[in-house]
Length: 406
Image (cartoon, rainbow, N blue to C red; front, side):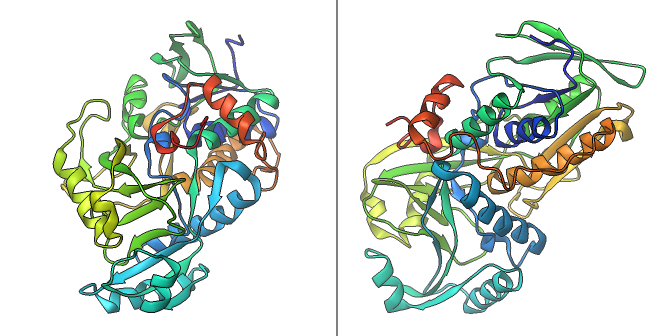
């Protein structure tokens, strides 16, 4: 292997593989490592919703705009990594009608297409919906299969010349003279690398890698449960139209729906408790929209950890933390050539990668445009090959275990 890559990307989720793909597409030598299989962190343990941005429209217009733009881009480049479903924001009896109006107006203001439906139209669109539905509006939500998405980005990076190593944990970072001197990588790599630039794209684990270099990031991770139950025939994703709360999203899969989610602060993204009440509450709240899920057989249950960035966070309710992303240049902390990209959503991973690659290329003096928004991902239209790649890169993850490789 090349022990002197120009850029070392740490973290093999959607953002990290997207960064590697973007860099090599601009002619920059890049190596990516991850401690486990690719996508085994936050990316592969989400609910898999391709956000339209409507969920954030009234609270974070910029983030919502990024979501709808990237939503459209992924529909063009990602092929079998996504599924077209649309989504509904549903107002039940007792939910604030003013919030509904604010949500739909804010969505339209940032360019998210909406289609208002009366209660009888909603129930016609979604048989089995609760009788307490007052109204809804349609948005272009969808479903992401993150295992395929990560594999497609990694394969695209490799075919352009990147080196990708799952099962290669970073063990140490050595800083000398105000810059990263070397990175010790174990596992399948078992070597000490000497990159010019290091990008920390480890999400909820960003503080751990940054700490090896003697700097802080300021993550405020929170856990959330996802419950997949048997359910046939749900078309659109369902979002409860109220302030974000436990159990307000139902994501359709093939013969299943994923119910989620909770938000509980954790101090260690590898070592945290899980609680039965999270499962029970998510099912109960989702059943308020789709009653049959209350008694549906459970297929699998998993928890994920959100990579929330909030260096000044000291409260317990982390739902209010922005889902936007931040690129940190640790030169400000006395370590040149070391960056951390934190926060964000699975839907906006490509935008996060582009912004990061822009900054890295500026540092390296590389003048090349980003092409990742227009060039299709590797094997995007070949789901069978994508599933083979998922296995090669470390196996399917819980979010899409019912689809990938089956």
